[in-house]
Image 1: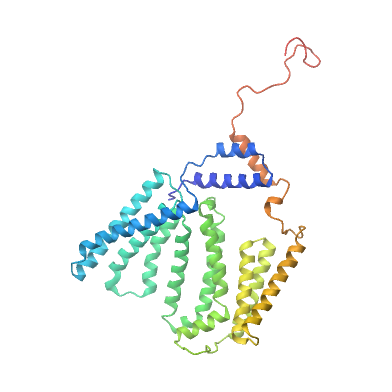
Image 2 (image 1 turned 45 degrees about the horizontal axis):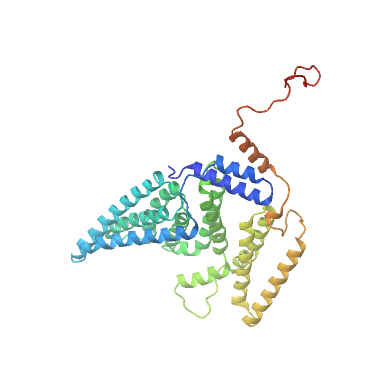
Length: 390
């Protein structure tokens, strides 16, 4: 089911780790070179600037090709134009997938910009084809989004693209939100629906992270983890719930009306950031720690929006001063490692760890040895082997 070779991902990860350890002084230059020779990366992946250029060039080629074919139907009736768009969408979807598979298998492109653009173009073409097929049915928006999901899921499983993973997550959110808005009780329970959805997605990501092929989906799973943690907080943030409730009920006033269960949402807005920070510190999880700090700042904004008593510029000055002071204290405190934390960058760390030992074992098992290695002994003397022969 995977389009890219698993070996590409494994070797890329191994070389990146070896280069990181070499920069820390944990591996010698010879060991690092031996790893690169034994685990050769035989795919094409340019630097980020060429990748962006190739992506834009491929996207423009796809757009121009579609525009050129659409000109054939420009003088036709509306029904003919719609039929033409439907046919062209299916044609370009098949063509882009075939071209994408050819480039991956024969040209060995891997996240090179060309394949990314073709992935998005093929998904867009499939969704366009399905949309015009379902247009006459007048389906609700949530159901149409639900029908679009299989294209994204199949593309994600095969290509593990991070942007496709984001598309799946937001399509699920749109589907749930629009479905809940169909019912009165759904509008009331929407924050809690999103809360449990975020929790479920986070648990799913944690479970998928235990798979043997985790490296293939590592980047996209990290993004999904970040999105699930962020949406868990935002779904019950007091500001989001109160303002969102006003928008849903089409109440446009200078101050949104109060909501039910306000103390509960105050509690979530206050507690969740500290829980994130605690989890980040306890588990050494950078994602939880960074999002904990960001959500804490948003919680301050939430309370200030409704209960602000000092001018904005003074509040910003105070917050900026506190942040600079807190950062300076943390830097000075963590110059020497304490409780497993340090301010020193990774390349200043010294000493080997278990990963280095395992990597050395892998390298030793992969690198060919000499055909005739030097062996001690062999002399004719019974004591030390240093007779007339060696």
